[in-house]
Image (cartoon, rainbow, N blue to C red):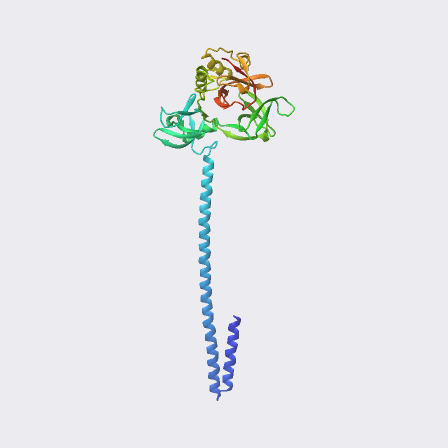
Length: 370
């Protein structure tokens, strides 16, 4: 605007100069009119030009703003869709499973290495246990549960919304040991009796949660663990590894056979006071019934069974020996040693008959029955 004013002034001055040099009044008047006319014409031309440029610039700015808003809208829409997709995925994840299946059997379901009834058994999926369904193969599901992967009959697995609703009823809070070893105490304080020592990654069923102490069930007895040494999560029962014990020169045929028989019941039900290998047993009911099949008759009491046979140290253990656990010298649990540092035992109502590390808790004594 300033430059146009200066330009107009220059034209006016030029017009006045022309007037002063003109020969007559008529000539002078014509020169003035011509000078002013040219100046005004040029200014009007520049004003129109600037107006057009301003309008064009405004239009371009409006278009750019509109494009930016549309782009932001699309990005926001994508972000919202992605967020909704993530929320849907999280909502569908139940107890760690995104494609949940639940075993619909009375005791346990065999997990096999291949999709077929004659395939090798690699694990047991207990009744109401959860699994991740990875793929379907002609009436069989390939699943993963706990540390076991393999094939199960699809018609024994509940899926979809029915499985999700059932999981809400079946899931339980579990405390997983997050340190090398931890004390299980009789009461929720450090001045009371230590019941036993439990090792890392052992899963303990939670009876009651507290800020400092968690009441848990260890096998068939209750105790307390410091909350800082466990991680809490909601879990379904998991599959159990089925491992045939290795035959060695020092293990007799009868002991080898006894261990294989005991392992065949992995996944079976735990029932307090039970003595039925098919309908449910407790820890001493399990060992009593297995031993009876091989001519060793024991009482239905873990404390009573510890008085039979002869004592052996943990370094002398052989498949078929019994290991006893409890608090101090008080025995409350018994298991069958199967070799390779493992036991098979009727643990609790959550896990049933399962395979564990022989030293998942501190043994009190070991006995050889034959």
